[in-house]
Image (cartoon, rainbow, N blue to C red; front, side, top):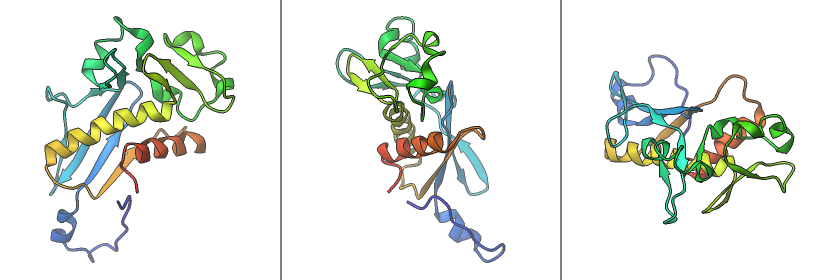
Length: 181
């Protein structure tokens, strides 16, 4: 999968550009968006209800599956220990980064590794990279169902304040989600 292709202005034909399909993903702290350019029009891809803003929430139900999006958000108050939101705040962070913030999160943390935070759920212990990859898998699946063709590339936004560890952790999430090769 090519993440970026640079061309000289005027040297690429419009038809060659239009044959490629790239996704743009805003992997947000609260909500995520996924879009693609179809010709000259940008289209947002919604969830199963057509909502373009997809909650960045992952729920681990008793049956062992994984639920992402609005259905997961509905579990925040019912099962907070197994429903992870705002995981982007934890991506690329370690134990020392959590010291003053652990009261902001309702779930339990495995702090056995000083370098990486992990969240304890009934399904197991997961890093923020793994949880973020579940969100990206969901978005990728929605995109594939919507466009009904192969995707040539993906661009995932990160905040300007992200340091290199957070950027790399986001890339690792995309790779884990099957978006990078």
